[in-house]
Length: 562
Image 1 (tube, rainbow, N blue to C red):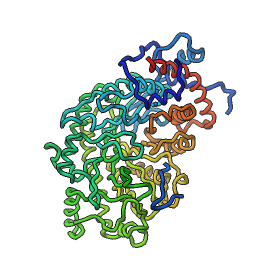
Image 2 (image 1 turned 45 degrees about the vertical axis):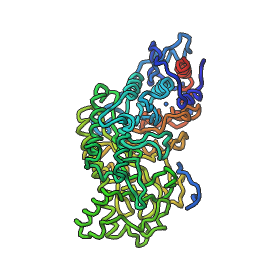
Image 3 (image 1 turned 180 degrees about the vertical axis):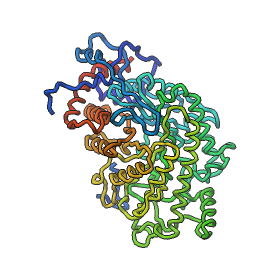
Image 4 (image 1 turned 30 degrees about the vertical axis):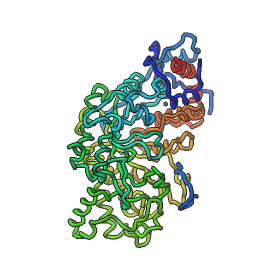
């Protein structure tokens, strides 16, 4: 029975019983072969407290079995010469030829709690479709809470081994995220995967291993960086646990590194981002566009603050963080610390505290990156780090939400250049979010400015000579968002982003209209800014592609039913 794109999309979020079988390979269609152009004659305001508010806010050449009675157009495409676009991994952000390769994020629950591939047949069909659309590869979270769940040093890579082999079979590259954080409690989290149970047991024994705010609220999303070098996890430090995990990954998948696995993104905080968990959505603690709260009140962070204050000559500053910085859902002008006129952030004390707080985050990144680059040295993979796109209240002087997250960025200080320089020292890629957003789409009374923020980050990476990659922060399927991504991906006259990762593979992506627009977007990104084609022409080519490959998608769907 043939199925539509909508039905395939639905399957990607519906459990499908698996018999473990895969369709046999009898023919292959290259993405470049499919991308034949059609004939040349075709021309072509938010409320403050109390109001509800939301942030403005997947398939290879196809290698499934082919029937003999497919359309003439499809057969012609199969016979066309194949031009393979190679991925290179020789240097930071290096890529061969023009254009920006597009990756697609996999579902958060791609691997089950039983360490198997979730919705195996639907996953296979989705990867076929992604590859046929010209997607370079996929990004997958490799959850610490799944792999090392049962005991320290007991690694179960089962589901990931199968998923990586599936990606290899379809000719897709993989960005593997070392996810040392909890899944659940952040924007877009559709499932819950806690930290390993033995880690949670240690947190239960010593609650200060968790990030803590000034009201004593603990956050179990990610271990406090204050205990990075404390042997608090069954005799190992958190940094040693992260290192052992990455080393086990390298040993297990050494045969795929540099070929299928081309990037290791190292998780460094909540949502995998280098930041503090200053704006936790879980249980309604924080709502957009609140300023968040400092996370420096566990005993390990306070011990470091005390030592820093004594070293600075102001021991009285070492007992606590700012006491006048408001609450999670305040706005800057509601607080003495963040207000524009005579705010504490712009005082000697403010500079001392914010310098210490942000440097602790940089040191955390430095420790993990030193380990990651050593482990994956000469393995043919890039190392990347994700930085959050905190664009709300960006137009204020204090940039309060960035400060509470650990980015010492104000109207008078560049907080992203130190991060870029730290990444540059390790040859790592700077991965940034909110690439799809435009300033005017966001609530202006909250002075949101994602475009200006992206511009600042771009300039910082250029000055530090570090490669920049991008992601969309929230799911978008419209041309308007795609056009913004294309604009942001063109960094300068002679430079482009090294990669873009699209959030995310889900049923909505495979709805017919969304799929057509996505295919056009991927093609435009791959062609690069030197190709002067109008958007309408690319959309026509995308429609042509979707039409002639429909039998392939239907054939993959039939395989899902057996």
